[in-house]
Image (cartoon, rainbow, N blue to C red; front, side):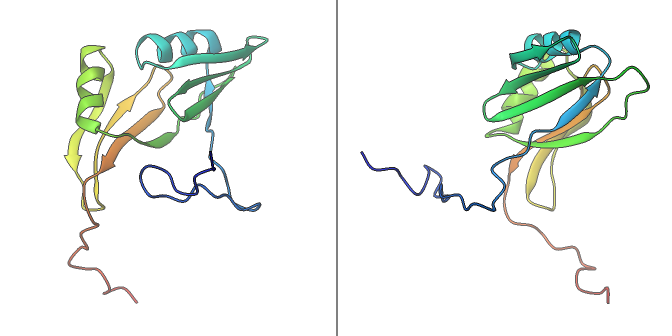
Length: 143
């Protein structure tokens, strides 16, 4: 069986030596195990590993997150996540009591997305492509 050079969606599977393969966000958290449990029980992730209670990882599909225990204030971040169907994910998260901080909407940049906040205050904008980017009326007027 030959290795396919194009995936099911038509994207090239060939990776050059200088290309980034993927990104794994590292999130500061107050408690690694408690955060792993939240991601597992509420967001549907799986626990990958934990190292000495200070570092760990969770994953969901092709997305992996590293979790680093932070003893001081947590510097919060926002990560955008692509999914196949944002409406379905939102429905599931509502049922699980996830904190929704921005309702789902189709955006002019071609995404249908919503935003959640997890137990450490990090936010995830979750969406799927909903069509082409719609230029604003001011596009091209900046010099």
